[in-house]
Image (cartoon, rainbow, N blue to C red):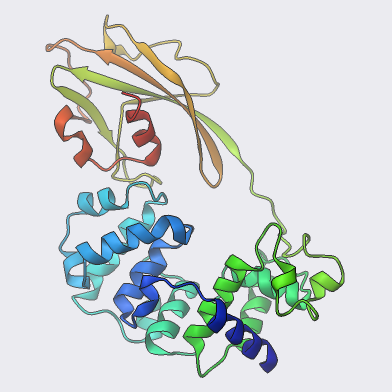
Length: 336
């Protein structure tokens, strides 16, 4: 057990990625990075981290920001509940980041993994992280077949990670195992020839690398069919703000009609009146974690006297970039 941590830390010292957020023990900045890199590749999220750290260098500055600005800065990262939770958590801090594990864990949007990462890296507290990288490394090296999405599996892997944790350098250990999973023990085509555990890795010795880790349930993917309409009325366009309880909550989008099947929109909305609805380009495929969205864009010009639904928002075309929109809508707007 002890040899695992010493081998891992030796590999990390020789191969760790040089990343700006690793040059600090500031718990607030580490928290920012951890929230941004949830479900986001470092290559994609690094620019967002730097943007947020520069714009909001303290909990107080983030708490004082308008939600629309926070969502606009987040635009393109997806999983917008992270941005809303980030903002809400900053407000709850009252200007000071928590200094205990319990305090960090109580922040909105922070789970066991994120709390362990922050506390180990900022405060040198002995809490092991357990995420997809950790599940993969431990299941392969130790040959564990317990499903990672089961209660028993989560308990078993958490206990093992905590047992393996280097108590003197918990932050380095946690970053080491995450880097190792991202660079060497990858989901597809792992670099076994470069792995310092290759001679003891159970999965490699038993030819089970592709089988591990095990998941009990497969994610069911559904399809949805969206028809977005770019509505022009003189110098204005019309938008709609998504409501609560939605993955795109409080983001703006173009007026939307959803159908149960693929194909062009058979019947235009009543508010179009006699105006002609024109198709713009081909449908755009947008992939989320549990569904695929097929989105078709249309364009319509309405006369000045036309009335729109009361829950629509009129925006000047020249100020459209100020509105935070989902990545899918951003891609469609690029077609205009």
